[in-house]
Amino acid sequence: MSATQATNGAAKPAHALDYDVIIIGAGISGMYQLLRLRELGMRVRVLEAGTGVGGTWYWNRYPGARFDSESYSYQYSFSKELLDEWSWSEHFAGQPETLRYLNHVADKFDLRKDIQFRSRVKSAHYQEASRSWKVSVEDGSAYSARFLITAVGPLSAPTMPRIAGVETFKGESYHTGLWPHHPVSFAGKRVAVIGTGATGVQTIQEVAKTVGHLTVFQRTPNWCKPLKNGKISDEEQKRIKASYDEIFKRCDETYSCFLHTPDPRRTFEVSSEEREAFLEKLYDTPGFGMWQGNFRDMLTDREANKVISEFVANKIRQRVKDPKVAEQLIPRNHGFGTRRVPMETKYYEVYNQPNVELVDIKETPIEQITSNGLKTSDRTFEFDMIIYATGFDAVTGSFDRIDIRGAGGVGLKEKWRGGIETFVGVQVAGFPNMMMLVGPHTALGNIPRSIEYNVDWVAGLLGYMKERNLTLAEAKPEAIDAWTDFVREKAEGLLSNEIDSWMTGVNLNVDGKSKRILARYSGSAPEYRAWCNKVAAEGYKDLALA
Ligand code: NA7
Image 1 (tube, rainbow, N blue to C red):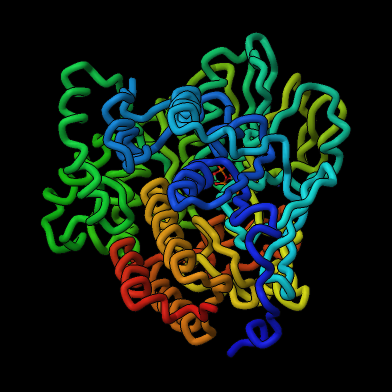
Image 2 (tube, rainbow, N blue to C red):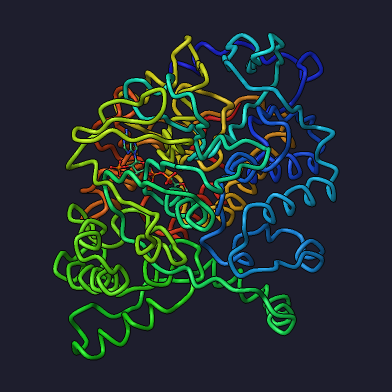
């Protein structure tokens, strides 16, 4: 018995609580969780900071934001009717279309009546005496519920760079993850973009189309790969709609739920001609193929990774006219695929435009943002607009921004300071009745696929408890240890875990996040599901239920 269970009082009757469940966040996970719990007859309230549904796709309305996964593999799969009635216009949909889709889902299933917008959650405190959560919103209101479900997303706490003078700039300035709802024009303007991750790349290639002059400030180049997007023809549309069963079956079977999965061969198992031809084909394949469907040892064998990286480096050299700029765009500190691979459309060609300049800020760091631009160690720049594509306090950041306290008033942020430990990424010791969707140490990959699984699993657990009048769920310490050991085991030997990135929990713009941690589960999605399915099949004995 854990300390929490020992001190837990009698459950407050459900009717004395405002809700059965409070969900934080109305993105893809929160919306679907609401629907599934409503089906169980539970009283659910979703608290959402924004003015509309969509989460990631509500906030990230920066120019050029779009799917990097095939639209038809990256949508909800739970409703045949929804699949049949929605037609994606492109293989990789842009943000406006995705947001329209999510609004359509909210309308179709009448979700908004249980979602409270403009309600940023400030704190969530577990009440041991009544086995419930007290959730407070920034406007001063507070609600009680038996269960707390966090649907806050792994990449939703935007971070600004720690550069002196950020607040002094008098021109327009935007963080990509907090992009305004009004149209923003770049025409004739001198624009700076800071950051060259997946977001920066999408932004840069779009802004470059109409900008007066663009200066890109790059600290670390990333390995980018052509997206190869295109419109979906009527013929393709019919084919896609007729093959949804097949599409989702494939997603279920692959390592990370993408349509692409590692090639069974090793890099040096084939002749150099064969290897070259395979890499050519992958480079030309739409989407994540080159990242997720490459030789199976690409992310574990240094030499294999080197050969593949050199192939991509040569593509960059071919595409960028100025050899000095090309070399600046080639990553030196990590191999292909060991960080998130940005998908691009004519990104490298942007640097052939006479009105675009790349500034390597490893060589000449930004020292200060000024009222009309910025200053690096060797130059002064003037801008009309600065765009911060500087990323997120990933994985734990959106949790850290809420004062979440479990039994005994222990803070989640403090608890995770020594390292993340969870039960299948869903529960944390000492935080009874709190369930996380796409939390740390859960399978991520193709996120909507992982979300649907996570949500269904949590609904299964809450349904099981409801049927038995159970009011307390807390993962057992040994179950948490077993899962954490498995997460550790699966991370061994992966080159990506030797690299600083949001995937290893590093964010130099956030206090205490300068060192790599075990932030992700890197095993396969089928293994993750097998683990969770077994827990359910065995009557959730890994959880203390009461
Ligand atoms: P990322 O991938 O974390 O990229 C952030 C970028 O911003 C990256 O190039 C950083 O350089 C750069 N950055 C961050 N802070 C600074 C400062 N202080 N100075 C200069 N440059 C800085 O975030 P994204 O939004 O692109 O993508 C996140 C995920 O969202 C993505 O993987 C998709 O799955 C969706 P660094 O590499 O740290 O040197």
